[in-house]
Image 1: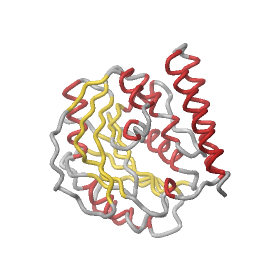
Image 2 (image 1 turned 45 degrees about the vertical axis):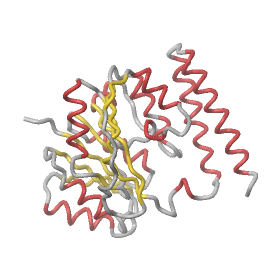
Image 3 (image 1 turned 180 degrees about the vertical axis):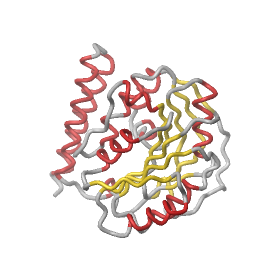
Image 4 (image 1 turned 120 degrees about the horizontal axis):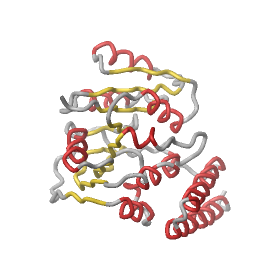
Length: 269
């Protein structure tokens, strides 16, 4: 029998786009799913939408908690997951019907702890099948994956989405997302890579990242973004503890760069 895969969806006031996200999950070609909907204190009709889907799909489990951010929601999912693997989907994004099947095959067929698949940015909730590109896969070591994570603007290797993880990577190494910070993914993905022996990557674009005008990346500078500095500092301290000089220095450069970027951004307002 195929492995159970946990699909975790952090949800906060997502009523405008949640149904499309959930439709793409419940209609996956890979069926053996535990679908965790983490309602992070929504005040709109997000919970009602979740309940409607749970009433017709027994794979869905709703967990409602006090609002405390996406990092906390992901941690709740990790603690309640019972799958062999776990993947995270943002509630304003959606996935191709073969998204989970492809990620699972990459892990299972190559004895890999993590699989990564490319994403496509879109402005609408419709799947674009017009792109014609040659699909390839790569087998990466943890060092190769970390090097890509540190590359300039290589967000694909940083974000928690577009990936399938062995759940034990989190549990055996006590890895959780930092809470009450911006960029919780910056504080987590590098640890998962570090403790992995093999990572598989495919350039096939099966995760759809929806651009929204109110997203954090498009908003003006806010001082709460300074919480990211703590995340970058912790990354430096992690590699210092591992006596890894190369990634310690790369982490230091990243910390200094974002410190300068934030200083320059703050001067505009």
